[in-house]
Length: 375
Ligand SMILES: [Zn+2]
Ligand SMILES: [Zn+2]
Image 1 (cartoon, rainbow, N blue to C red):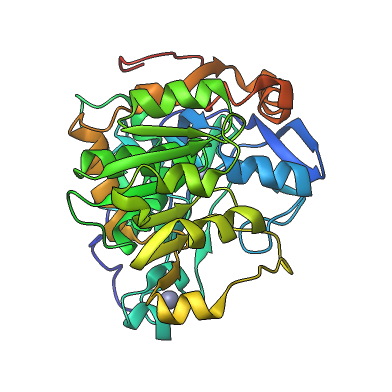
Image 2: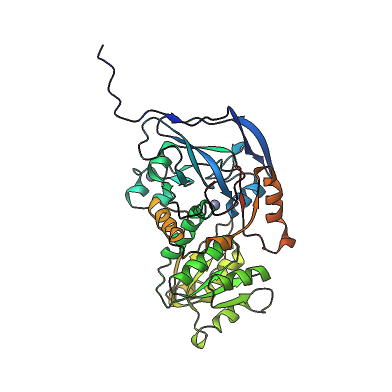
């Protein structure tokens, strides 16, 4: 027998953790229950995070309505994926994080070895690992996400704002993928959280943004986030014409980004764009959805059609830097706060159509801390 190997890697370090915790468990369609479950403990390479803020997200709302998400979550399962928190347990072998660190762990990490990863398309990784469970007092961060896609929050950045890194990474990916240049006219269709993020990013990049939105509150939000023009779908008779009239000789926009996920708006996006322009189908419709496109227009108009899904660790870092820089106005996206016990009410509010899109994101605060300062 050889003597015990010297400790090359750090051992498990732990704060005092309760045996059980409260966590939201998704059981099916519109069925999320707050349950007492065992507090997760860190295995090799993992960390346990005490959740400080978990943001509601359009994808969560879709999951809540449909009861599952083919790629991200199958019930029964812990729920929620946009979070920040404090490291309270560090598993064996983890050298990059310490107890007490404030972190923004992303909701996925690619394998780095498959066909897609080797072609720098980690967002399409065949083995993309997803993590859910942000609507809880504590969450386990799997080893791969600890190693590849967990960001340390500097003290000048609000933990609520840092929790927006994941959705902003999706928005930034969609914008970068559309290859806009400063001065381009970009139409963004949709005034949900991601539509608003995309238009804000486009405005920050020096594009002239035309926001196509439905509700009065979205008009206000779009203006505040930098849209030059607003086309409100409930006010104009012909959305395509209204947008085109905002461009020289009605030629159409350079780039149209669709962030609604309906066939009508996918078709609208194609009709808005000028010859030689680019359309990004950013919104993800349900499986089996089909659209009608004029192939003559596509060919003779020399259009580029593309779609963008999810993010990669590199894009997450750029999104995080944008939030940390203070240029991205994260506070405008958080329109409410609620304790974990009111998660169902928060979803009900987001689902309520008479709410007219006034709620953008609700910050769920399992630890009870609100605001900018450190807990
Ligand atoms: Zn999300
Ligand atoms: Zn991969």
